[in-house]
Amino acid sequence: MSNPLKYQVRDLYKKLLFLGREYPSGYENFFRPKLKAAFLKNRDLKNYHEIKKAIDLGEYVIKELETLYYLRKYRSLKRSYYN
Amino acid sequence: MSNLKILVGCKRVIDFAVKVRVNSAKKAVETANIKHSLNPFDEIAVEEALRLREKLGNNVIKEVIALTCGPPKAQEQLRTALAMGADRAIHVEVGKDDNDVANILQPLAVAKLFKAIVEKEQPSLVIFGKQAIDDDASQTGQMLAGLLNWPQATFASKVELNGDKLTVTREVDGGLETISSKLPAVVTTDLRLNEPRFATLPNIMKAKKKPLVKFTPDQLSVDITPRLETISVVEPPARQGGSKVGTVDELISKLKEAGAL
Image 1 (cartoon, rainbow over the protein chains, first blue to last red):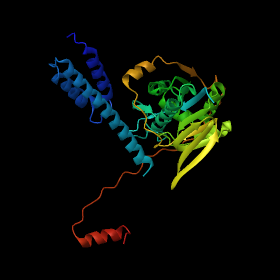
Image 2: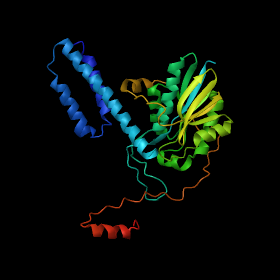
Image 3: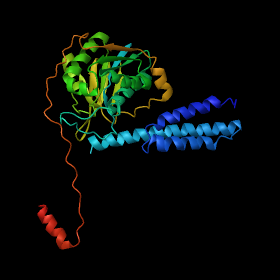
Image 4: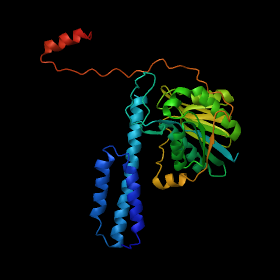
């Protein structure tokens, strides 16, 4: 596999793994296998644009996760200090 | 005014998602092997410093410095602040571990240590979280302002900097209060001031290379002897379970029993 996007894909995987450590449903038993399955599902993509599209989807998931974590923190603080 | 420095207070606290347990001695909470993170209100403080710089430019705000007083492991929290975008960090090392620090370090001592650092670094603005989510003292910022004889703007929900004029909107009971003061000043942040950015993996890696200086209280010649003694720590009472009633009469007798009727 000497695809020019190889490093971008690996980078994305690492970033997502890092974010997954805080995932509420668990990391080892939930997030990691799910993430791996999601990447394996796209293993046969060959077309540059298709891979690019999959990477964009991954970047979007990163933003969603960050927002999820932010909201979780905000809500728990609001519950303990402002109600 | 230009070449301002902003100093941000960062505290290592037990993570907000962890269920806190009282230790067997009933004098403190369990800290061993428990996830710690940067105090969420301090994250808001770091974010505000960074936003001020992004808005006013690097010429106006030269540096954002993260400062913590805590155990060796508090470095993790400084690295988080650096990963968010602070330029360098100062660590005043106190105690061996989290348990130790909870016993030794009290807000007055922290304020004195901050004062020593402020005199060294000469920042124009010190930003704190309004309180830490572990001891909820909400004192350090106010005490530092008192010790330095600086103006203070607590519970900020909006901060504007124009020249050396600082305008802060505060959340008070039943509304908002806007105050203005000159720099230097102390600001403490409220929950709704901003949404802190996430420390991403690449930024955490980069943060490992940013400078971090260590001090001890002795080097700063600050006396951190505790002035307060914790008598006891207890868990909140457990919630009493409800019960189902079969008939209206039963309900009324139960209500009478509870003194509601």
